[in-house]
Structure formats: structure tokens, C-alpha cells
Length: 394
Ligand code: TTP
Ligand code: MG
Image (tube, rainbow, N blue to C red; front, top):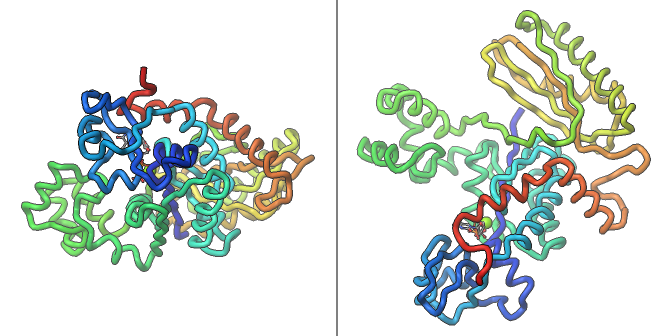
């Protein structure tokens, strides 16, 4: 099945929050970071507004340089607590579009919307929905990229910043990647980049159009990986947090098998157990995820989000079987199958994406779920991001 991956990155995140909260800063250069101390400050810029970027100011630049570039800018301290709160709110909003979400940094996440974009008709409309929801609920703009692989989604979210939206379909993928410099490929650092350049590989297309063997003889296994990536092939999944509240079971076959009857029987057994547990816990799930491990240990997951939550064994089984049918395993046998259900609502009070529940209640529920699922890790991740500026000025 063709995957649809979205990358969301907030625009000038810390600075945009300050501009939102301080009307005097709107449309003006804003620098968030260390105290400039009239040009004598020793810390660095955490980030700055796009108006400040016009003066050449950027993240990680010494704050004294920023002061010299634009002394009339608003210089503000880092308020990590506030930014973490906003980030938490944004991750909660994103989770209503897909439970398969991987927060990457304080203002950035991947979502796998393969199983849920049908709720908005197309991936493009889903991305528009994401941007619109973030804008309405937080007053901030996000840039969004969508593509069949993670790397391309991330590149796509960056090229029309701020407030950008770029969707790349499978047929557009190589046309999109090939003109880009080799340095944009994941895994190409300075050293590999230099080596590639010296051997005549300037763009991603230069790699893709050559023979696989040439890349292998130049860079070994990494060369083969880069060749695949340059041709738009990359199965890396959106790594969603395993701490997410879900009910799942898996089954390892005694001997690897390609027998569909045995596989279906195993899936049925798993779905029965899951359905029982859901009913016991008064939960209904909207998202069903199939996990398949092949004989070579490569592991794949495929999800589908239903329009109505369920705890019925036949609905879960039908969905898992459909996901299995859509999954092309090629010639490899199967070692393990698993089924996971998530994106829960309680039976008493059904949570629907477009329901008419009170909006505040809806947000509280989302935040509660986020806390339940991630604990403090969102905040933890956020804090670790703050390696650059200073939390607060004295
Ligand atoms: P980024 O997403 O890299 O930057 P940004 O959101 O400010 O701007 P844009 O995405 O539109 O280019 O980083 C997110 C936040 O992380 C940023 O607002 C501040 C913080 N950060 C630092 O503190 N130091 C840094 O060096 C970087 C790059 C980011
Ligand atoms: Mg950003």
C-alpha cells in the first residue's frame, strides 16, 4: 500500500508565540534568546521572526551579532514553559488527524495519514485541515509537507516556509528529489557529500541515474542505501511512541509461513482477544494497525482509521484482513503478525472528530490523552531541544 506521510514544522516557533502574545511585536523583528546586554551579551539566538531573518539573523548566531545586525529588534528571553505548553496543545491537535505520530522536536512531527486521510478525501485536504486547525486553535502558522517517504515530506515542509504547504505524490517523487543537491539526502554528511561531489555526483538525480554497483563500490552498503533513497525508496516508518495507550496482541508462527489460511486464523485469534479486552475496559477503538514481521526480520505496520469507533471482533478482523491483503509481502514468508487498536473513546461518551461536543471539553480530553500516553516525555524532549539559548534572563 502506498504510504502518505506528513511532516509538520511550526514557523519561527518561539518568536511566533511571542508575536502572538505581544501585539507590539507583530510584523516586527523579534529575536528570542540570550540577553544581548547592548551588544555585550555572550549567549546565542534561539530563533527569530522572519522579519528579523531579513537582517541576516538566525538560530545559534551569537546574540551580540544579532544586536549589531538589528539593534531596534525586540530581544526577548526564552520562556520554555510557555512554548512547551503550546507544543503540547499542537501535538494534541495533530493526534486527532492520526494516532501514528512521531514528535521530532518541540515544534515538529511526522504523521502517517495513510489510514486516515480518506476522512478528508485527499492527503492535500488533510494537510489543509491540519494547518487550519493549528491556526484556529493556537493562532500560529505551520508549514506542512506530504510525501510517500519521510525524507521527502520533511524537505517538502521546508521549501515554502513560512505558512507553506507542499504535497508530493508518488508519481512526482523522483521529479521532486532529483534536482536537489546530494547533501539533502538523509545520511549524507560533509564527508560523504565531498566524496560524492569529487566523483561527479552533484544532485540526487546524479546518484539515481547511475548504476547501483557504482554507488556500492564508492560507499559500500551506505552507497546502496543512498541509491535506493535517491530513487524514492525508503520504508522507514513513522516511529510512534509505544507508550501510547493501545490494546494489542501478536503471534509468532512456529515456522515462517506463506499460508493465507493460517495467517487469517492467527489474525482472527488476535482480534478476538483484543475485542474481549476492549469490551472489558469499555473502550472502542478507531484505529486498527497491522504489524507484519517477515522471515528476514524486516517489520512493517499499516493502519486504518475507521469513521466510527468499534469493539466488534468482526469489524476489527475485517480491517486487519484488509490491511493484510493490501500489504504486498513479495516472496518472503511471514514470521509474526500483530494487531493493535488505538485512538480510543469510551463507550459512554463517543468522541468523534467532527462531533459537536463543547470545544473546551474536546481540547481537555485531547490534552489528557496526550499526558496519559506520553507522560512527561513531550516536555522532556522540549527541554532537551533548548540547548542553545538561555531559559530566562537574570
Ligand atoms: P526550528 O523549527 O528549527 O526553527 P523555527 O521554528 O524557529 O523556524 P522555522 O522552522 O520557521 O525555520 O526550531 C524550533 C524551535 O527550536 C525554535 O523556535 C527555537 C528552538 N531552537 C533553538 O533554541 N535553537 C536552535 O538552534 C534552533 C535551530 C531551534
Ligand atoms: Mg520550526
